Length: 169
Image 1: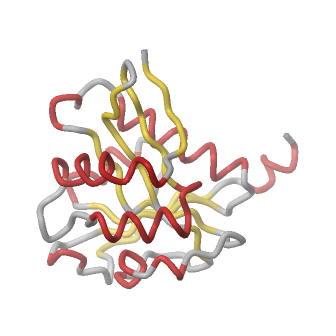
Image 2: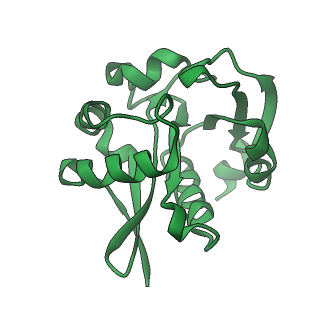
């Protein structure tokens, strides 16, 4: 049985483990970074559990900026709870638990949470091989990002919510 829940400070070690298993050393968030993020925006962290064991996470701050800047990864104080855009810093599933739809479930939940909060949409950066994955959820690439986080080449992706459809619901 799977369950998606909001993270708390007590999850910091688990988040750090999942991140370390999922990203190269130069790109992964550290325990210290997770502590700062959780202190500033714990409500912007979701954990997916399978039979009570944490297997995946998604997180990111809220901002008024339409694109992610590298400084956002290290400065949790840039979080603006009244911001227009929900960012995604990381979507990670333990390697042994991949190919079960968990990343998609986390992403759908995060998108719906942002929609319910009245955000304009969701922003992220991803590597070229993940553009098609995010496109299936409605994200549109605007090309190579200014981000050089971890020394990688990233692409800016944006999912803009249809505000007129929200007003009708």
